[in-house]
Image (cartoon, rainbow, N blue to C red; front, side, top):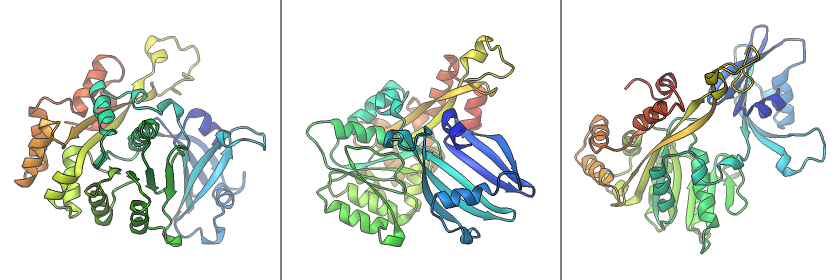
Length: 370
């Protein structure tokens, strides 16, 4: 199961308990697909086996738990670190038993730089310029699985490779990929490594660039904005649909509007669209099911992103900041972006449709109805 998931490029493996066994599902290109079924009594309890591998107490399977495990990509017991896939295991109790979800945390070296992400050239140029800044907060917004962490890591790699060198520290929950040229840390509340304590220590480490993996509560929002106002360049992510919703979310977290105007440099809203399978489109598939797309009609994904800067370099950002102070609604903020003629997510998506990269069905799935 795990080797096939790695081979297929899956991001997650699901084990859903049912009355007669477990459904095995793989998330490939953002879509969850049924892969197999394990009946009770055939191969033992796969969730319990995973818990043992992750060092989790099996007698506590009635409680939510998280753990880590590693899997060598070759059968050799002497596999090096580059041949090992790190995984995060989440256990959740259900009426039929413990449900398990495995997140595959691996370095994808094809997306090491901003240029290889596939974003619009204007967006790429904006992100490159932002990596040269010395302070302020840069936020990535979008749902889970929209490539936010990949983009953040690409920006950190660019910073770490530039001269003169800068001190970079990350505070993550958890670390999803290791970048050898920066200092990365995992949050561990049980061991006293909370967000508040980690940030206090990080700013005393002569740090210039900070990454906080996600703004998920008022405490984190305040800490990120305050750090951005004290001479640090701060990166983080936020679960919000677009730039306007991100600003409203921060206000709901209790961040004052004057702090947003002073602290935020840019917000990037990002999504991933599945690309049309070229073999299926050309009609040159000999087997009953295409080996590239497994019969889905899509193979691989491409990123689209809409970046709004609030540092005076973007007229849209300035207009949105002024509207925030007047208490404008989200719809008014979104209309401001459209009226400015900016290439928002839907505009970029439809350009990809016209180029034959994706199709309208995929755009509707990701962005919904306008």
